[in-house]
Image 1 (tube, helix red, strand yellow):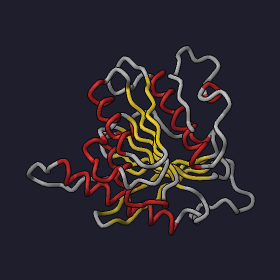
Image 2 (cartoon, helix red, strand yellow):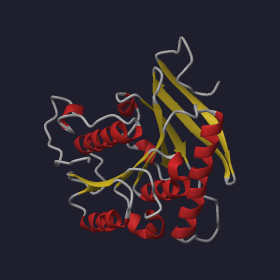
Image 3 (tube, rainbow, N blue to C red):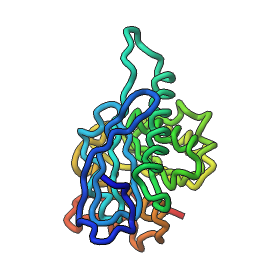
Image 4 (spheres, rainbow, N blue to C red):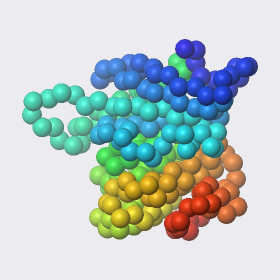
Length: 246
């Protein structure tokens, strides 16, 4: 499979294929998916079964983006490892994979965004701090970025933190992280019955918020006039908190 670029003629209307990505921790198997010719890519790093949660994929294609699902792997150890060590290992994998994908499979002119959920939200934020301007935008969903405060002020990419407004501990952690960030940033609240926001209406809200953030900051388009309502299905029966992306 040739590198994914935006300049090839007669491109199929949709593409999906797997790529073996070499990293210092082993080989990761990334899944590319996009409609038509993507204007950018979002790398979704996952280490704890996030791929089973319907948060991303075809939804991003509505804004002209392709998705790269990147299952990250933790080293097999007999004794338990400190969470900080695991986070460092996975961050290095995401950084190395992003740079390899850029050099081998993604047109250098196309922007790259990062998405992480739960534990992997901190990994995406850490990787963004190391990658600097190589990353165009970041979305971190329901994570604990307060555990990585030493890197937050180094992030240059516009960063969206999405949190369940009923999860007080995670909300407090993200509010603290929001204070540390020095880049363009926003804290958005989503309502849901479950703490992890796995119900369909909540995941739809997260999709809409993330897509709008990438649309504005990764693809450099102006915000939609009635954000986020214009990204929602007209049949949606829920409401998203008012958020201003300035």
